Length: 112
Image (tube, rainbow, N blue to C red; front, side, top):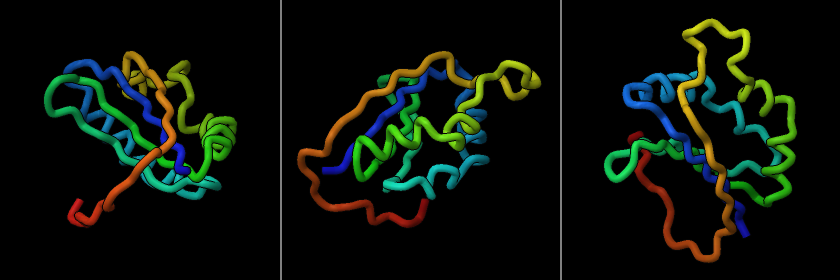
C-alpha cells in the first residue's frame, strides 16, 4: 500500500505567498528520492489558515530514508544564520502519516 505523509504548516496571516514562493524555488527537490510518488502543496481556502504538504511514497521506509537524507536536511535547514528574508514562513508544523486503504480515480487536470 502507498504511504502518505501530510505536513500541516501553521502559516501566519500574509505569509502564504512567501511560503508558496519558497516551495516553488524547491520544485522537484524530492522527485528523485527512492520511493517518491507525488507531492502537493495545498493552499487553504476555508476552515483553516494551515497549509498542507502532501507526499505519497511507495513505503513508510522510503519516506523515513528521505527524511534522514542530506537532501532533506538541506531543504529544511533552520533559519539560524539566514538573512531575515529567509526566516521561516511557518510558525509550526505537525506531521501526520497514513496508509492508503482505498483509492478511486486519479488526478487528471493537467492545467495547474
